[in-house]
Length: 166
Image (cartoon, rainbow, N blue to C red; front, side, top):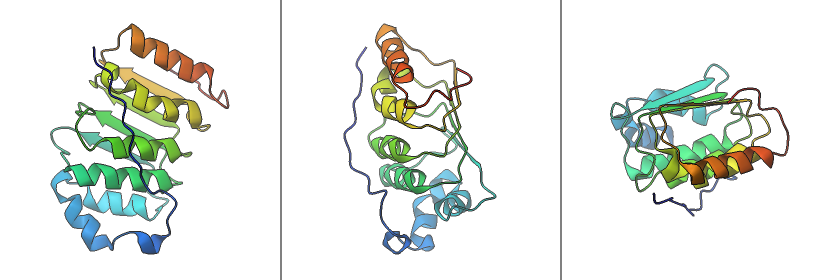
């Protein structure tokens, strides 16, 4: 099974003025049906603690995945991320992984029907580097020996051992 390893730069350290106006983001995320929620996440709205992306309902163009990665990387409020049946190996999703690497607020991630063998190497920095991450739920996610080894190494090398549930 081929492992994908994305190397893509996402700017997560820029000021709000560097973000496009909300109208640009509304159009970018319109296809996903989540425009308003993502705008709230962008502005660290304390009322938005979780985000669920379900494919094909929340399909997004390539630029939207990269933009979402930037938003998630800067967000300090988001606590839960649910990725259900998303084709996480799609070209363009690497921006999401880069944003996850920078996020320190997500406490729970749920991956459902996602091929972990294809993306585990991209998720390792998030799993090992987020000290807030306390729960990882994997449901109906194919994972082979290489993915299991990457996951176990990431969890063993965590900077803090706050993981309560896998």
